[in-house]
Image (cartoon, rainbow, N blue to C red; front, top):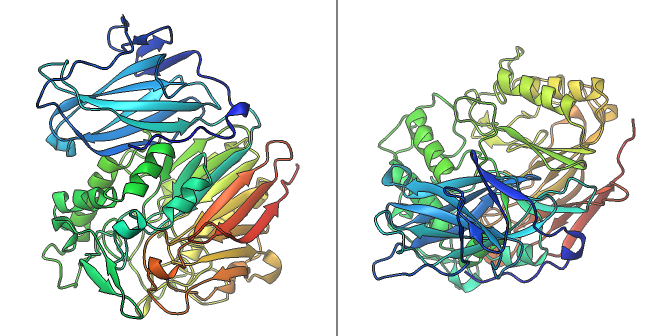
Length: 531
């Protein structure tokens, strides 16, 4: 793993101090490393290693990093115990040692460690080893990562978002280091990356070569699991392994914590619960069976903190990231009703579900952060067709809310009645980038306050768009960047990521939409409303 360069903003960060807690075990930083299991101090030196030691196969990641905790992830090549060290400096001279889980084939040898009691607003280095279960002197070479905890003070914040990874046949291309756009994202040094869904394309096989306009070739890495649609649990796991073959993506994930939601391609295109597939590529026709396998693989390979209030494995949750920012991560797939013309006149919970809707409104009302960022895996006002039916929330009728719009209207109204003006919606899904301003002055449904929705992506997939806007909630496209034709490749550009920056002094929130090389295409600064 390539070691990351020092953070140019580290001067405003505090140094590591205090205690780190894993579960019920506490460790205190001192001159050496302390074991979370025994509390004994040991020398901060490499373990003695003999032949046949374990190997970490797919790098390391950190996810859902809050002010004082983080979830770490890695995968070994055999049953072993994951052990992490956390330090304020890359030399690990003074480090906390965290004894993690034993990884087994039950989780495809992946494991996650939730580390609590970290100092807030701090750049931390971590490294993970896999330790042999019979001989603790035999361990893997460490894989090193970096994370930045959220600040409990009003410090500056910078994060990125995008979605749609390795889709439409555009996979891991070694000529670009893996995924072309990632190098530009890494240069911006964000606090975290919000992945807005379609983290893998389980329904998207890749070929070794694809002919580009002009006759040149796009070359994909190919593994067995990416030669067909995913149906078995191992095939779903292979989708996540495949993306981690991208060297620059693996490096980015090691230095940039992730906040992740899912959409449809983690299972299959435009799926909904109860669906029976007619796609001839599938021998398993039950989407519910496929979704269960896809969900398991998602949770095995994505570090998600155990903070969701949902008892059934859904991923909606709120991340409290200090006094300036709360991020509300939605699951708009698990509760989704069948795709129809979306002209229903009765609200049935067909996109968020009733429990998640109540949770979202309640948590938005409880939030004391200046800004509430709502991470939605489907855009609100863009019409997203599924053949003659509707896949998204909007359905093209500019009148009063119908179908899934009936699930969004109560949320927007609750925000207005609670006096919550500082909410911003971020999404991906449609494979181009745009800025939408929603206003009741232009809307058929008017019981809400104006707000902004920003669209980004794809990160590495075919580019499409633009889509039509539905006037029900009064959206206006203030900016759009889309390709000249459908399914343009990353080689041609038209890959996008978004960036959000919050100024610690003014509390202004600035959104910048960036292209494949990191150039700013559109910038909007929002001034917080004061109640």
